[in-house]
Length: 324
Image (tube, rainbow, N blue to C red):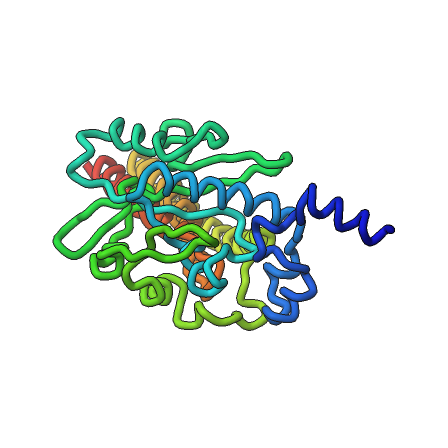
C-alpha cells in the first residue's frame, strides 16, 4: 500500500530533478569527479532549482530569438555533460552578435527583451555591470549572463563592453561560424562551430576531464589568498616607507637643499608611494586571475588589465604635471 502511495505522489508531483537530470546524488558526483572542491560543496536540491531556472531562461531565449548561442560553462555542459548543464555550475552563458542590424544599443536591448518571457526578468547594462536574464524558482534565483560580441575585423570578435575588452582578440571567426545545432536537453539550440577547440583555448587542454584535486579555486580560497597577498604588500610597503623616510630625513637635514626642493622631494615621495600601492593592488589580482583551473574560468583578468592601464595612464599624466 505504501509503495502504491509513493508511486501516486511521484506521478502527480514529479521527481524534483526530472527537469534537470544532471543534478544527481552528491556521492555519485564525488566518485565520478575525484572529490574536487566544487563537488564537495555541491547541493543537489539547490542544483535542481537553480538549474531549472537556467534551463527555462536559455530555452526561452532561443525560442524567442534564434540568433543566441551557448558559450562558456553552458557550452562546456553540451560537450562534457551530455547536452546538460555542468552539475556544479551556478549560472548560464549566452552569446549574441552585435552587428549592423542594430542601429544603437537601444535596439540591442530591445532584442534582448524580446528573448525573455513573462517569467524571466531582464537586467540591462544600465541596471548592472552586464546583461543578464533573471528567473526565480522556489525562492532560488538563477541568472544567465548574456555576452554581446562585436566583429572587430574579418576574422576576429571581441566583447562590446569596455570593462570586458581584451587586449588580444577574444574569439576567432572560425571558432564561432557557421553556428551549428546542438542538443540542450531535448531542445535544439545553436553552438559554436568548433566548440571543443574553443573550450580548450579558454579553459585548457584538460577541459574534457576531471581536474586533479586542488585545481578548483573557490571564492573563499581566493579571498584567503588575497589576504595573504595583502600581508606581503603591507610588509613590502612598510619597508619601502621606512627606507624612503630615512632618505627624506637625510635630505631634510642636508643644508645644500633649499626648503622648496625639500617640499618637492617629499611630495614626489608620497605621490609615488600612493601609485605604487594602487599598482601592487591591481597586479595581485591580475596574477590570481591567471590560475590553471580548467572549470572555474574567470574573466576578471580582462577587467583588471583594463584597470591597470587606466592607473598607469593616470600616473603618467600626474607625473608630467608635477615635473612641469
